[in-house]
Structures are given as structure tokens and as C-alpha cells.
Image 1 (cartoon, helix red, strand yellow):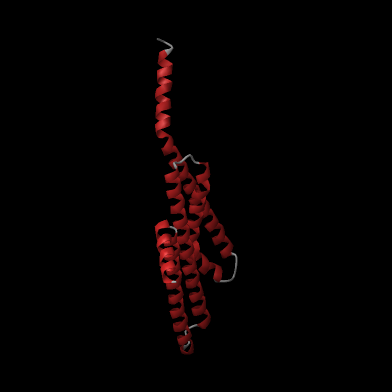
Image 2: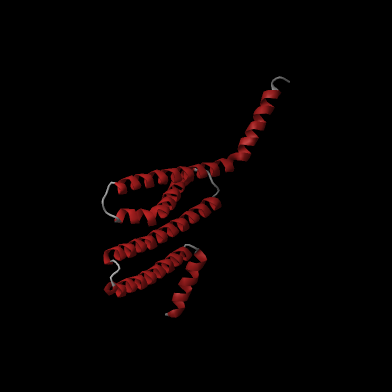
Length: 178
């Protein structure tokens, strides 16, 4: 009987570990994303220090608009880098990979629209408040809005094209058109 007690205890612990196995992989993925978030914060802090040492306002504007997209993309990349080492089911692995692609598209679109905001603020700073510059500011603002809409539209298109059903629909639509 003494030999059965440790085996029963070991069997129970092993059953618990096996039952927790999928959760440990998801926990590891969450830790990788958290590590990426912490690293992105350190990267942004380094960029803030660097920007503080320069005399230009471009890097300050850049950090104002690009800080959050940088944090998103670095966090997503960190979580994505952990996926190959995790023992996930194929369906969950595919869903997480797809979510990472969508989050990366979001981050890029966000960064590009932020770059347009940086350009607009730089232009406004350079032009000043002279009445002769008002038409230029208005035209650039309209151009920025058009480009922002185009970037957002392309982002939505790229995001939708990551779904196989949408790709198949687009292929059949193009085939029927011509």
C-alpha cells in the first residue's frame, strides 16, 4: 500500500498538469505579449530621451503621434515571435496568427495616419499664422483628410483580404467582370 500512495499522488499531479497544458501555452503567449509591451515602453522612453537631446521639433511630433502605434506593433511582434515555440492546436495557432496580422495592419495604418498628422503640424508651424498661408493650410488639410481616408480604406481592404472567404469573393468578382 505504501507504494500506491506516491503513484496515486503523482498520477493526480500529472493529470492536473495535462489539464492545464493548453492554459500554460496561453499564459506563455500572454507573458510574451507583456514582455513586448514592457520592451516597447523602454524603446519609447529611449526615443523620448533621444528626442529631448535634439533641437528639432520633428522627433517630438513623431513621438506624440507614433508612440502608441510603436507600442502596439512591438507588443504584437513579441507575441507573434513566441508562437512557434508553443504547443497550440492548429486551429488556435491559425486564429492567433490571423489576429496578429490584423493587429499589425491596424498598427501600420495608425502609424501612417500619425505621420500625416506630423506633416500637417510641421507645415502649420513653418507657415505660421499669416493670412497668405491660409489657402495652403486648407489645401494641405484637405489632402491629409483624403490621404487618411485612402490609408484607412486600404487598411480595411488588406484586413478583409486576410479572410479566405473575402479573397474568394474578390476572385470570383474579378473573374465575372472580365
